[in-house]
Length: 406
Ligand code: HEM
Image 1: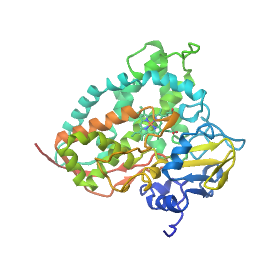
Image 2 (image 1 turned 60 degrees about the horizontal axis):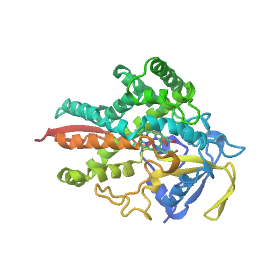
Image 3 (image 1 turned 180 degrees about the horizontal axis):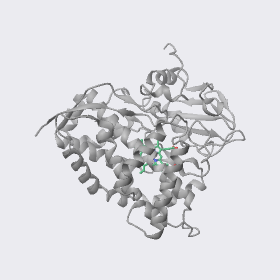
């Protein structure tokens, strides 16, 4: 396989036309441990390792003692993006055990199987209402008109955010994600989001409500009876928008594009509704909206005959792992019946996605109701992508609603 032009993975613009699959296919084949030298835009001016094969990605995720989400060496502050983040060691996804275990214990008390299942009826009702408002002949951006509706409504229900604040919050998060920066949310937007979060925390402290966030605000650690402090709660609130709503929005939109490009798969799912469960997993594998993570090496370690040194940054690319020819048959085929499908779209190990059950529920409801609605969509222009290497996916999906079948 001849080497393609190197892609600057630290440059958000490299993702503006979609995920650079050709480069990763070459990496998996020829350079499974690839040293990415710093470019003019690489944050912190440091190079980093790139892991693209499933087995390597899995091995790093499952070894948090060697590959830290917090901090690793003298050189590095840590975090999960290429850029060292000030939240390293403090926010749930940027911590290691035992601190991570402590935080996760409390947020798990909110995200119980029962609490998530209890959202189904409400989310289904809202989805039906949304789809009923769509008329044949309508031209729309599927991303904003449909895909982002249920994930942002769901996250607002989870966080106890009133409906009238929802769109303003969504715009704030979208603007933050589009601001060129290696951190998921950039400065000023993050400050405003945290300010809003504090107002919700104060309200819930004063008066508990029946949402998941309120449960978390009032939850107590078993060991010492303490609760999460304001900083921890604000950070968690701010994390849930990009971690929960943006990812699921991109999965729904990317799933719809996959169906438009593979109409036989839509017909098959329509005829065999029992395939919904495997279809949802395939959509997550196919879109992998949370495309890479970074860890920091805590002790010198060998990989593919190379020495990784303490403090080195290691990025691993779940999107590439999910297209690994060594694990998936026909990885570049979108197959609603794919089984087994052990994708890494929700991560693995101690940081396994907290909202996986909620995301699966939302995806199942949206596609089930889309199938039931009889609505059909036709692409009317070229899709555009978020210029972001972290949250990969569609920014716009221009479609026309064709007909309302029986
Ligand atoms: C299709 C949708 C989603 C995808 C693809 C996704 C993906 C991921 C991945 C890959 C991780 C692992 C991070 C790591 O290893 O550092 C993760 C963690 C996390 N996700 Fe999700 N996620 C989705 C939906 C959600 C939803 C709906 C929520 C919340 C309601 C959520 C909340 C979180 C949180 C809080 C973490 C951090 C967990 C920890 O560090 O212990 N995610 N997600």
